Length: 239
Image (cartoon, rainbow, N blue to C red; front, side, top):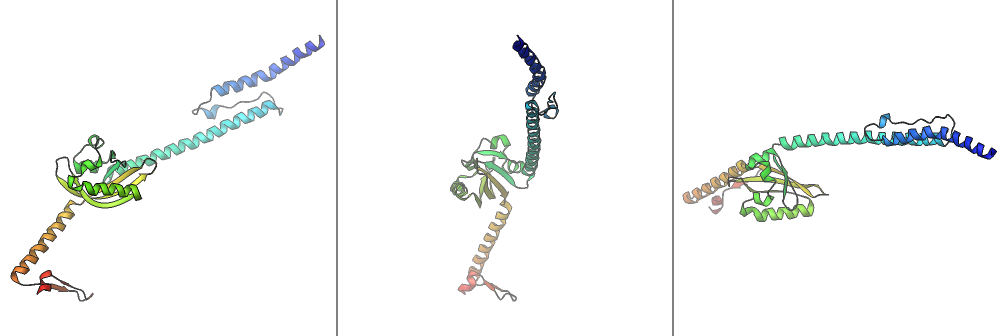
């Protein structure tokens, strides 16, 4: 009888000592989410150093760690979003056309400059492959460029694009892989049509001058006094 009474007393004290802190811990655990970590803490109902106080410290330490990790995660996410906004602003406002595509040529994204340059809206470009932007005469050049990008990761070359209205333009393209995990290629496209027209006009003018000199049996030469270099026309050599 005495032993039974002692067990009853022991169980009563154990229940009184453990029930409240364990209930508090259970309640706090059920409330855990990343939005309220600052407000979740448990307090043991004893000042003695025992298993309950160790459990209290371990639980509160875990919450502090989660809270710190969550704070760092929020900061990282904010930094990523800020960089994405900055990149998007540079992407959309660039003076050069920009295309993002994979190594199969499938266009993923485009900026406003290239859309205006080619006359295609963004939704249309996103349904196209890069080779579809080239006239047939340039397809072999485009094929070689893709291979070089795949092999070494970048290339710079001149070629032609064809606008939606079927007119052609000369372009200078700098292409490089910007994401090796997904093999995304960024192509920066500059319209060099005006420059090419000037070069062609100069070539025509040079050819006309040479033809005129042949007909007139005259030649021309130029001498630079500082460098000592001289330049002769083709007909001057013959004469």
